[in-house]
Length: 134
Ligand code: TYD
Image (tube, rainbow, N blue to C red; front, side, top):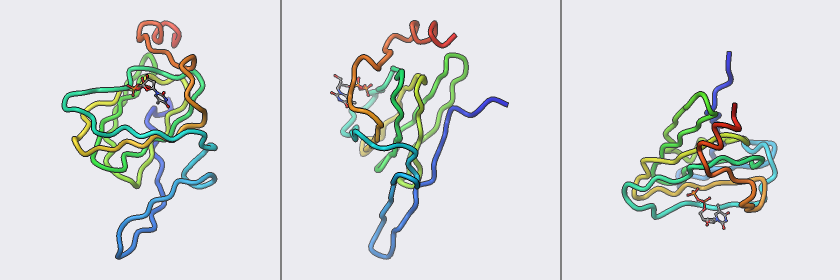
């Protein structure tokens, strides 16, 4: 059986009567040391993002408000998942083509990454990606 492309991780919840509190820490929900955090917010209607793969980077994506649909492609199979909860993280390992669609207007997609920004780690050409994936 082939491994699923979508790897969802449960994020421990410590909410109480005051509200929510979600924790991603090394040895818990997080399988790597975080070296960079960014978040995508205020996305305009109809915009999709991503359209690239990373050669080495590992990422952990949490939609901390609203919802997005993340599509993952390995050159042969495509899988899609709606992220709409602070209680679920999507792990994206190296070598997967990702697209992000259907941003709700209130969405905030937080991405934890195991390395600093490096443009040379990107593959932005889908045809090149597919050729490399073969
Ligand atoms: P990009 O990764 O292309 O966004 P997306 O794939 O989601 O559409 O990043 C958009 C721009 O922001 C690009 O010029 C690179 C820059 N950027 C950084 O400088 N540092 C970062 O950590 C990220 C994620 C992007």
